[in-house]
Length: 82
Ligand SMILES: [Zn+2]
Image 1 (cartoon, rainbow, N blue to C red):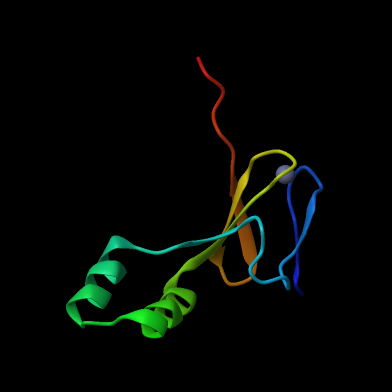
Image 2 (cartoon, rainbow, N blue to C red):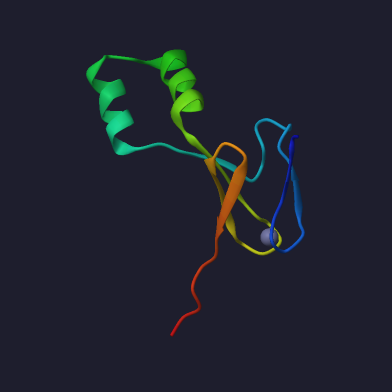
């Protein structure tokens, strides 16, 4: 727990916060909902951390790792230019 290993073998220690390679991905519908309810400041930040998908960009290979499932990470890598 607290560790994610990229396909390139680089290991993230996710216990660090804010993580230098960490991102939060949130849907446009959630953003709209927050705006419509008049949320602001710390309430918005709390919602983002509750609703957002965790993401990390591997500083070794550039893959983007997304926590789409509770116990599994999915990685994406830029397609080579054609
Ligand atoms: Zn990597």
